[in-house]
Amino acid sequence: SGCVRFKAYFTATGVPAPKVEGFDFSTSAVKADHIGKAKQTFEMVGTALFLLPLTRYVGLVLLLLALPLAYESVRRKVKTRAIYVQYDSSALDHKTIKFWMQAKAMGSSLTVGVPGEAKQTDQVLNACAVAAVDQVLVEAPSTVDWHFLRA
Image (cartoon, rainbow, N blue to C red; front, side, top):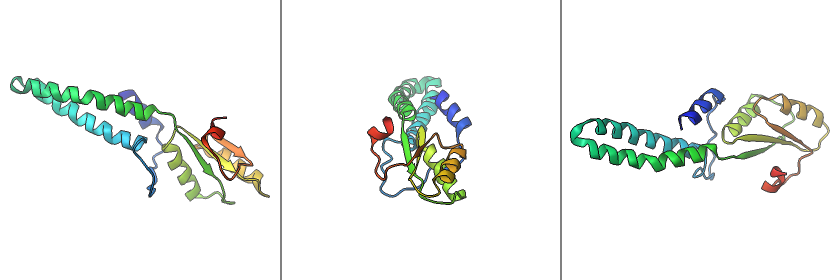
């Protein structure tokens, strides 16, 4: 868990995740962060109580309760997530870049789809120039499924 947090600290973009209504965060890295905080609380209080001779067993119970939380926290953080974003805007501005950075923070790879239009070359070059974008999909279809992204 410490290695995952160390890597996340030094690779973070500094942009918080977007607030999306109707999006289920139950399997996301955002939820994993809350599980990690609960785990850390159990570990700190459990260690403090374990050091005191009178409350040693209570501390041991809290430390044991932190074990499944530690496993779940790390499992959710290292899970591979592919994020796909359709690039419909003709101009690349700071709002688009911020959105892409937020999307990248929610997954492990960001693919930007550029639909076939007259200014397609400029859009592809703009998308390739952004550091948060891992892949650019030229002439992207309007509907993309998981099998299409995995291929």
